[in-house]
Amino acid sequence: MHDFKKTYVLKLYVAGNTPNSVIALKTLKNILEKDFKGVYALKVIDVLKNPQLAEEDKILATPTLSKVLPPPVRKIIGDLSDREKVLIGLDLLYEEIRDR
Image (cartoon, rainbow, N blue to C red; front, side):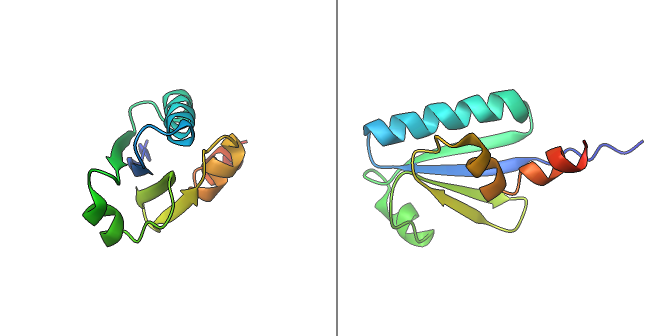
């Protein structure tokens, strides 16, 4: 039997501790803990402290969630409050659907 578990590498770009950034991080952590326990790496990047990282990744707004791995790279802008939109946007839902 094969273990097809992927590791998801995610970056969340925030601008300081704004309400939207806090909501985005909280929502994302809930999704990851519920559905992706043990198969993700999350890096939170404060663009105020690391503007060069935001520039390199062409981040134009915050909060922005970027899925780095597995490819393709996907980005979602906003507070991530719509769980399904986040999963679909990150290409995470197709496995859930396929397994039904």
